[in-house]
Image (tube, one colour):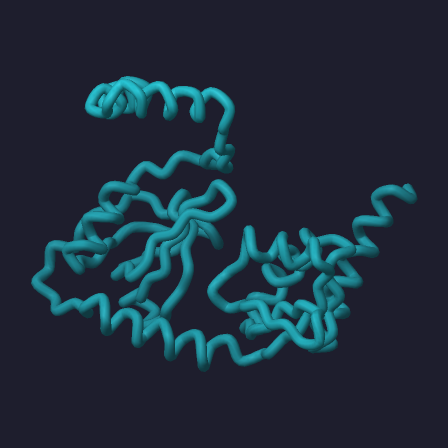
Length: 213
């Protein structure tokens, strides 16, 4: 990285080199490093660009075979994720890339979706699968936390100067939603639905119990 930066600097006039070097000495940017290495990241990118299907195994919930056509790759909080259509289950899903193993390009001459078609599938999934609406009130700092780290099934709204986190989730995602909201601490209050509010309260009680024993 340093060698590439030096080569780029060498192409600029000396005055600009001096200015940029001064800026680099006083400005630093910190990003979250990868939590876990992803062995097949280059293969995932290739499959997206070439509209190919990747076959392999998903270890996130046990050990399940997958045949994924991936429509989106994104990095959040030190983890690479991909959103894809699984040809085996006929479902759209979001996958942690570090849990996808033994990936290979499917060799069979099977028709695949275009990226535009994958986006349409994803939109239908978001509309119908996330069928449990939620609404949470945020503090100003809670709003900042959400802006730094949020997921496709949620968005920010403001009403009368108050920020709200809104969206939808599926019943299978109750645990994931609970853990996400608990990570916001006292900067979020779940207003609806009751099952999500109860789940967050139960999680807080378990946390408090660890300190009371």
